[in-house]
Length: 227
Image (cartoon, rainbow, N blue to C red; front, side, top):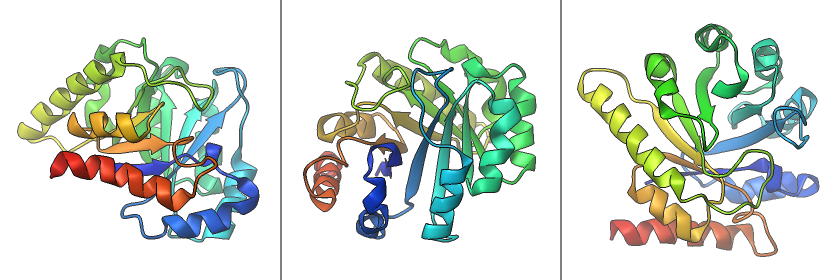
């Protein structure tokens, strides 16, 4: 079953500890941290000080998945790892020397992923498939939450799923396939069916309804596929 990764960008930061208690029963819980700089994407969010505070509040067991939508990921990734991020995903469009950047992140002790905007050709993934732990497919244009799911992401996921599976069959290690953007009760069923390992969910989790009810609906949507 696809792992649900809550996007903390959509949560109520003043009530975050109570909200996270609801998530404690989730298996393989990844907390998704959307890092935006107002330059690479037209929005500004959190930085290392907030991550450091979250780490102190949540303890060492919480898994922080930091998605760097920033122009200077090559210079800044170590700041996020030092602040407490377990995983770093960088945008291929924002990195000059991708292989070196990925290597440096791993040497710093974090797992590493790459993310692609909706119009970025998938061929850019092939040279680094053996070096990444995760590929993040953006199903919206990065920068703001609450956008609608782009149907073009379905074909992109299918192509990447095939690419990853063929390499695993040839002896390569698995790579997590993640998706982010417009994931809700309807779309999580679709992406789960086509082989997404981890779905980032924001506004469909954090809204005017109970978080526990939203989680239950998302799991039920995937469960109906498996029934």
